[in-house]
Length: 126
Image 1 (cartoon, rainbow, N blue to C red):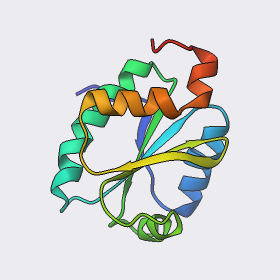
Image 2 (cartoon, rainbow, N blue to C red; image 1 turned 180 degrees about the vertical axis):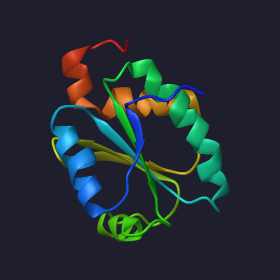
Image 3 (cartoon, one colour; image 1 turned 45 degrees about the vertical axis):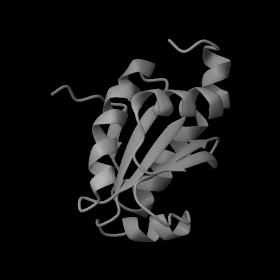
């Protein structure tokens, strides 16, 4: 399987600050709050990992396993009430979110519709 530099795991609060909030000042960041016991999370994972490479690094996917260390605190801080929850961050702030398993067209539309930064870079999806 191909490993992309624009898909990575988040491990703790400091990592979230650096790799989500600060990174979102330059590039839209989707954060997938998930758990390995969650069936819809397991469905959504390959969907996200298939869609994000289509953006050629113009959108980052940060995977946050809520069962790891400080990650449950991050889920609470961002008022995640169910899994999976995916939040789009831009300029250090939440822009939009969705919950539950979704298909590829939904995820593409979610990104294209809600990302103001992506629209500025390329108004037509690559």
